[in-house]
Image (cartoon, rainbow, N blue to C red; front, side, top):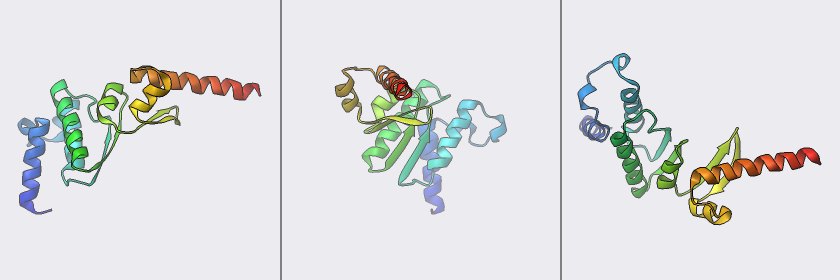
Length: 146
């Protein structure tokens, strides 16, 4: 990546993540939220075609979390593949085209939010997740009884 493009990306990400006030600080002296911002910026500064985010809004203030979600929407609109893990179901509702629900290392469900709503008649992704957890537990009990 050319130097001028790197500088442009750093400035753009600093704006997005509100990082200008601590760009010259050592990581040891940053708060948890600031470290989270640095981690995100480092992982996307080179503008990869696939973006992998693991709990990207954890530890961030509301405004920065919204900026991250907006940025992810922009990445999707630009045709990038975005993999996003979260425990915050509202984020998954807002961001994901496809949702894979995992509990205790096992895939419980794989589909769109609308497919889950149609299947369960529930409208809240937290409730839908609990539905699939309970369904898996019921199937475990049936398997053990056989």
